[in-house]
Length: 167
Image 1: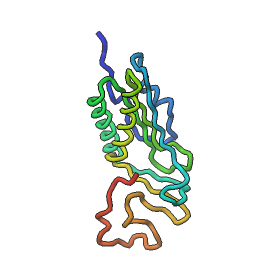
Image 2 (image 1 turned 135 degrees about the vertical axis):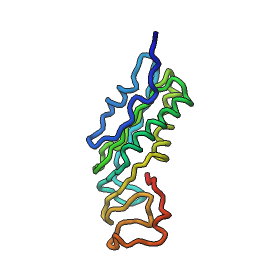
Image 3 (image 1 turned 30 degrees about the horizontal axis):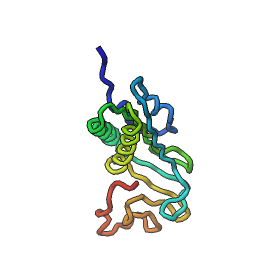
Image 4 (image 1 turned 90 degrees about the vertical axis):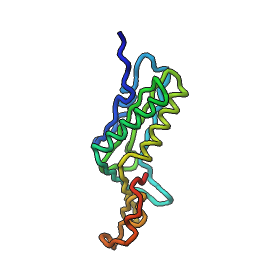
């Protein structure tokens, strides 16, 4: 009697550096003919501004549950895939890994597609917030009205209209 593999074998947040090997190993199995990996790395520029540090904050219970839900949805759309993801929270420097996603499937096409769907849906739906630091000071990505400045703490009427997911 064979046991059917669980589609979401790893969905976690980490404060320590991420391991690509851990995520890839989580989706490995004898029926996997292809494995696709996405690695998101902190870069030194965003939207034309220098970046020296990123801070990621999350609602951990909700973020883990949503990542697992996304992986299970994708597995429902693309049978025989296994998915794994780890996302870093806390302070990250340029070059640090922010997220590692992996998808395995019997064939490469499904592995590529599943990995792409995984990262795209995580960026759209998971409650993780990003604060970028640079020469002009820190600012929350996606919160244009709530940018940190010398007026930090000063709120505008329309601050509540800023969107939650800035990635």
